[in-house]
Length: 117
Image (cartoon, rainbow, N blue to C red; front, side):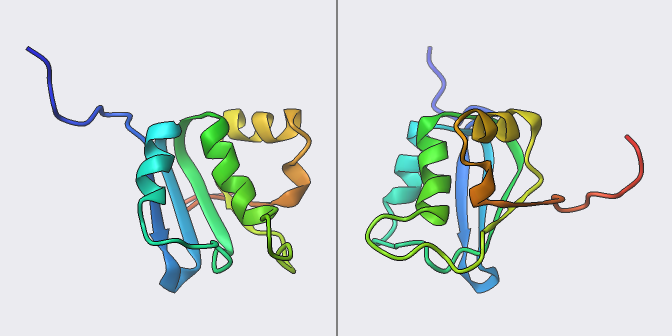
């Protein structure tokens, strides 16, 4: 018997336009990005902050979504770099390996403190 319930780590992409926020959680891959893209067409020009603090995995589709905010096609790049909140080591390393880390302004994630962990 197969389960139809979502995987615990299934990725989610949430738009919060009233806060100029895009939230990515879990395994952000083709499935989660396609689900997000089913919304009405949107150029994501409203996004000023991207919360990636709960990302457990991100593939090229997730990276493509980040780049659609920071380096869009068909419209000018944002005047200010979008904030990338709470980048995990995996996300930061992927952006650095691809040479696109400077497209984002890294900031602490929600609930982050300066105290050592």
